[in-house]
Image (cartoon, rainbow, N blue to C red; front, side):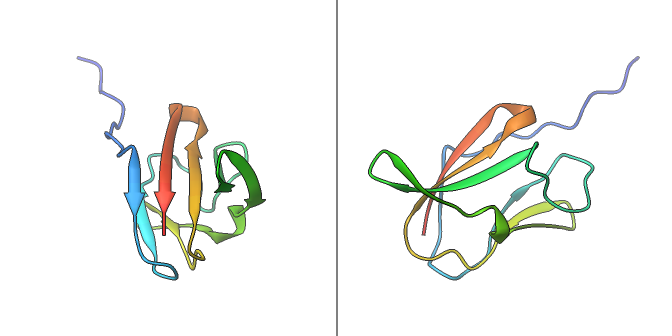
Length: 88
């Protein structure tokens, strides 16, 4: 019987307070975030305002979003084709 791949159901929206660390499971194998796997963009209305990739970290199997200013963001986990709206 073949082994199954790791799987997780991600939320459509992730809420947190500005400055706190938000986390979602990371199912990849990289020790640090890679741009070809992940992106985090700040949104203003329906337009992208800023690249916030530098706030991402990987620790203990979790993807961390650290020290985000108040606002709306779009987190993309590219290899899983997952998009999460983030509000802080």
